[in-house]
Image (cartoon, rainbow, N blue to C red; front, side):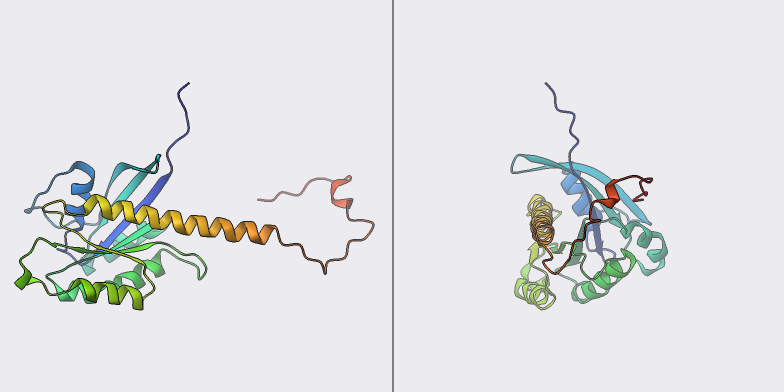
Length: 217
């Protein structure tokens, strides 16, 4: 019998300065195509792609956002409801690396993340195919920045030659799974906790007797 269960849908937002290769990463991952003459994204675009991890298929809804400041009001409304945020820079562009903190702050603010609402951030250093003499950000710099900012997942990619592109999206989902598992364990532990200080009187069953049921909405 064919299962009617839908695949889990995860909203993935790719952020970073204009020109770092966000659209190229998305297109390489979704359709395995690369266009080095692609134009800058205006506003936002999104594509869907299924990804299998440990026997489970996840549908990734990938949102490619415009990196230019003038498109800020167009992109920020789409941050809400995100499950994963990919912070992207180009390894031959030090400024795009320095701006990662600004992108993270922008996402955290407009996604309306609560203090205890953790979301997986993945740092992606794109354009690893550039000659060594053109590199402006080392892998050690990336790893150090991530450690200092509490980000546990980072990877260097090349949309041009497809290096580590599939691995980047897989890493992002695996990070999401770890956070979800941790959240489920914490919720279970909270629900299993009994408040021994609570005193129950003879009317402890009164909520189930007579009267109309209150809406929980």
